[in-house]
Length: 86
Image (cartoon, rainbow, N blue to C red; front, side):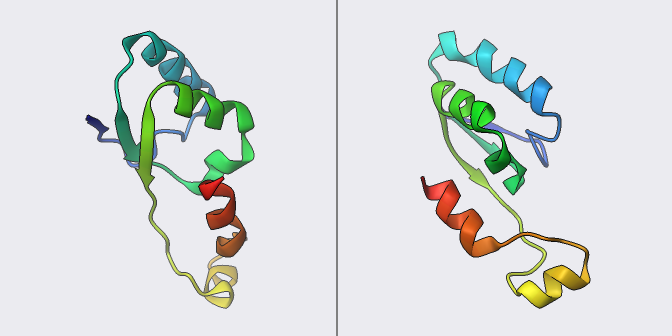
């Protein structure tokens, strides 16, 4: 099991896709840190799974919707959790 130490391995979606494509033939298992932005890119999600991703550490500034709005964040964490589990 590999842990990629990167605060957000998918901050550059195209670079991440390139990395994930390169990992596929190696058949390793890995985890990393990532933002919920990955949920907006189905191709990225598919490549993560194909490349051996077992999960992510995801940080949250808050789980309170009003607090998130006050910080300029427009995430719906309930929806995001459901999408991630899919």
